[in-house]
View (cartoon, rainbow over the protein chains, first blue to last red):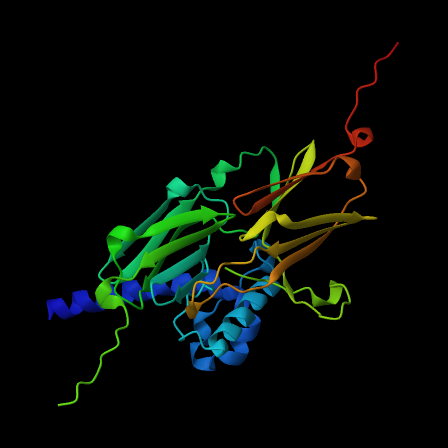
Length: 194
Length: 125
């Protein structure tokens, strides 16, 4: 009985935390949300004075539209969502018969600030873009660019040789070339006539 | 907002092949000396960058350098669009002294305030 009490208490706590998150991020979407979300959940959405928001609601709407477009473009439906904060730098994966190549748009980073690791067939690229690097005394009155930590992980489409991976950073684009290991390469199997 | 925010088709030049552009993300800062605009232009090198001032408009166009053929796409998020953004300049900016630098996909534009608009002390003789 006591356990049950504690569990329900924790659930309530988690719910409250989640609700706060909604409040922070969803308020700008109020106008759309009221159309999209059934009235039952309306009490989760609190309207916030737009003047307090750094972003204009139109920016948010543009983002929403972009997210929708991306959903319909059919990127496996698992692309990163950035509607709710955070920075997910866009990433491409290509493969030919010898290599898997991953490119990420990461403007304004030092190459030492980028961490690349491979673990169990997944490639992780993480790092931090520091705003302090751009020293400036004065006021900022528009801030659209992304700063802070990021982490992108992708499942590699083939088995790669982790020792031969190379990475280069040029013009704000990181390119990681992952040579396929012998077992990851496509093989032609001839059928023997018996 | 990892890729575009707005495409500025309406301000694009009328050419045979109408291009879609994406607006690069910007940070704008200002102090007593100058206004500084930072633009994220990943994939653009100095050769692909075009900055033009016409009357009171500053237009930045960035073309992504051609990428080598990496094979078949498995998963793509990066949009293959060129960047374009137009800024209206305040009359207080000295357009003859605008400077720009491009490093690691970040363009920094420095727009100095016109000398005559800076505060001056007048000595009493």
